[in-house]
Amino acid sequence: MQTTPKGFRLHLGIFGRRNVGKSSLLNALTHQATSIVSDAAGTTTDPVEKPMELLPIGPVLWIDTAGIDDEGALGELRIQKTKSVLDRTEIGIIVSTADAPITQFEQDLINAFRNRSVPIIYVFNKIDTAQPRQETLDELKELKIPYAMTDAISGRGIIDLHEIILKHIPDDFLTPPPILVDLVPSDSMVVLVVPVDKEAPKGRLILPQVQAIREVLDAHLSCVVVQDEQLSDVLNRISPPPALVVTDSQAFAKVSKDVPLSIPLTSFSILFARQKADLGIMIEGAKAIKNLKIGSRIVIAESCTHHPIEEDIGTIKIPKLLRQFVGGELEFKHLRGHEFLTNDLNCDLVIHCGACMWNRREMLSRIMYCQNANIPITNYGLAIAFTLGIFDRAIKPIIDAKNYNYSVE
Ligand SMILES: Nc1nc2c(ncn2[C@@H]2O[C@H](COP(=O)(O)OP(=O)(O)OP(=O)(O)O)[C@@H](O)[C@H]2O)c(=O)[nH]1
Ligand code: SF4
Ligand SMILES: [Mg+2]
Image (cartoon, rainbow, N blue to C red; front, side, top):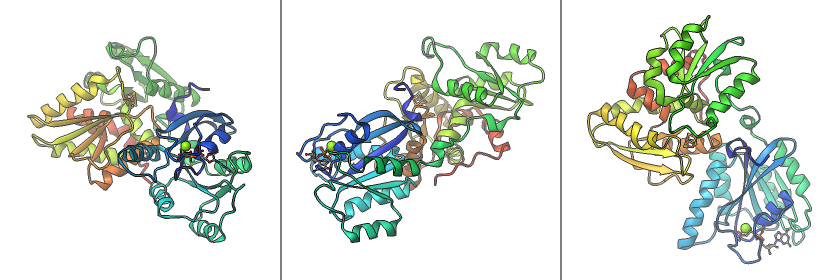
């Protein structure tokens, strides 16, 4: 249970002013002393994550945040960390003390979630000490925000809160967009090209490859998994030809030569732009590569902080392809992990990894930041396909299925 990757867990973020009982609420919800509680305001400084199984929906990730109504240098850092949790939250739980009004602080949280189409649940905590004001309840009714009343110490109201949470699970968590099975006929076979080079993890496959195989099996389709060296030989032996070939983007150049034009071809990374992000926007982002000039600024963002598998795709291969494409030097900035420089995205293009370890919400938040700043964003696979001149071919299987436009809500 604990090994379910975070990206598959429903992210439930707990937000609110300092000392309102956020950590106590997390402990009551998880029935464990997960987060440190004290009567000193500002006890939680870094986000506290707790993976758990929440019946009947399955794996979730609770995230307790630092109260962000404080000020000063340390406060700034906390604010950034809490905001980065907000970007990946799929249900926003806003906690306040029972008799407190909705101030600008809570309203800002409400607005941030609303801008992301993230369901909100309001929690009046410490109801053992006071009752919510009628005007606050009326305000929430007006805003159509459900609420629970809790005493996090005795556990009163926690079951009600669970029930409200269950009623507000986002649809795309319950029914995530498919990876590839909707792109091929129901009785078909697909070929997955998985190079096993020195960057591949020892003794295992990476998450997108495993997920694709699992989805094929769940749909009762079949697939052949090959390395790029064996691809030509395997294609010669398969009859009728496969309905689709999916390759690791790093092998795109060779694979696109080996796969006859009559066989649809795409990459894992492009499929994940659809599943984990918004393919329509990422396609437009890739097209912005043609506007790059010598000296253009490019942000290359990777979700993982340490990433031996694709390390040189972001730092070496993509920069090299782009330099060749524009015929000169470019300025690169590399970002890793959750911290996305929301107010320092001073660049002409963002190229993101496939974000396979993350939930879709976080990528949609990043897309939102880029759109607000008027900066095109694309991903590794699309950028590679574009610079290699095989872009139209690589996106065609998805365009043809007319099922690609998962837009940012
Ligand atoms: N009476 C009462 N006290 C509570 C309740 N929930 C939390 N407390 C107390 O309120 C104080 C703050 O609780 P925390 O859970 O640390 O609050 P927090 O919101 O996480 O605070 P920060 O991490 O500082 O932002 C502690 O002394 C708790 O014991 C409640 O429902 N009723
Ligand atoms: S860096 Fe991105 S694509 Fe690579 S494993 Fe991490 S989340 Fe997946
Ligand atoms: Mg706390």
